[in-house]
Amino acid sequence: MRLLSLTFFLLMTLAGLAHETKLYDVEADASKQIAAAIKEANAQNKNVMIQAGGNWCSWCIKFNKFTIADAQIDSIIKASYVLVHLNYSKENKNEATFASLGFPQRFGFPSFIILDKTGQRLHTQNSSYLEDGKGSYDRNTVFEFLQAWTPWALDPQTYQATK
Image (cartoon, rainbow, N blue to C red):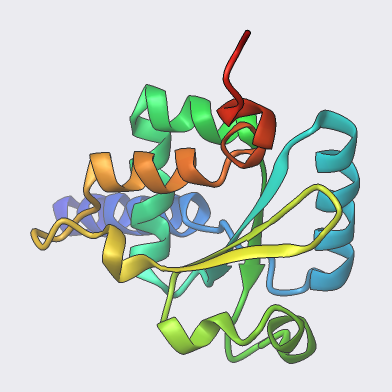
């Protein structure tokens, strides 16, 4: 009976983990996801942040958990970006979409693509530059990356002297 209880507990834990880590929809039409995000970003005066990766990618899952756990980072994402999780997996490589974005998979996963509210690609970020070398992400580096590509940071009026 004890073995049966332990087996049940392990299966439920694994099922919970599998459900928890489904950031990427392998069946989604990536071009439609991005088009909807651009439309939303345009209406809200935000940029689009695409996190390219897959449910198989431990660093992709780790980044998502990292950003949610830090209130300031979570806040800047919600205030400045429409977030899209762009799937790349054996089931669906979204090759045409990745090609249209300049092949960000060349940096490994996750990789981040920033689009402005009209859909123009502004930046592609190699996520290894955001790591802390200790198995996680560096909070200050991630925050600076996110802050540097906000609509506010890219607005020329931000840098004009007030009279």
